[in-house]
Length: 106
Image (cartoon, rainbow, N blue to C red; front, side, top):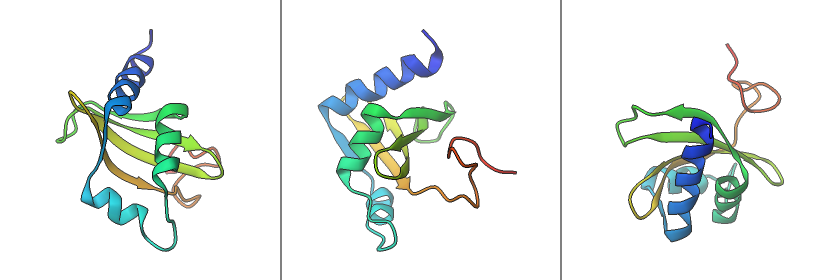
């Protein structure tokens, strides 16, 4: 099993128990120009893919997940023992990301 497949399994297992949204994530999700729902976040977690891995993050091992239901959504999250922490979520921009929203430009 690849490293990403192992980690996404951990992410999804703890997300089944509980999801905790940090204040920064809530602020970003509620901006009028994006309004990202918790349903979109859950869809990304359970159906998306890890596009970046951050094993040395200050908040613990975390990752960037791309989910795509009606639009692309990026979710940065970190699994803990009994819950998944949503650090932030945003709509990726074509100014910063290639057309598949998986690879950063520049």
